[in-house]
Image (cartoon, rainbow over all chains, first blue to last red):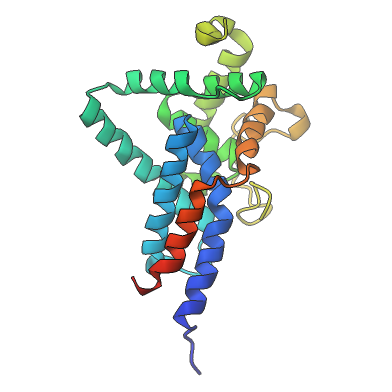
Length: 178
Length: 64
């Protein structure tokens, strides 16, 4: 019995699955970097990378988790590249991203976005994966390439940070809401 | 597939410590739903025009 599926069929179903996760990739990328244009570039580059690597994708794998990991790694390497190019320390880059974010977002979502971008990058990623994208801790740990326990503590810290920023410290958000 | 948290087997609870476990939706802090709203607001956006080129790229690269 032939076990193989026609390559074109495999490609087509892969393509459909890939297309179906694009909106989620956009949301994750936007959350990570805080800029719509940069985020969309990341997503497109991620999709091309995923498509190129489709031979390595095994049917039944969670396409969303698989592509999120690609996006995440691509984002980090872009950050490192930009860092080299511009000589900015990561903190300065983060602050710029915060200032560019959410010009058109409704105010409460803007506050949310600003708070998100005050988090350390690892915690932001963690709370996006768990609290927004709805991954399990195990999936999120795999995407971020860290132990599950590390993911759990990052999420807990991110939640504490967000609670503190959004509920307790209006000063922290006053930079550009005046 | 439309729900962002539709992945993973349902009911797979790993015995998370209290406080880390996802709280019930009506008992969670306001920012938690704000975070999901922020995320879902992007998920629900139509793909920008710039993605048309991407779709073509995926179509054309069959012989890669």
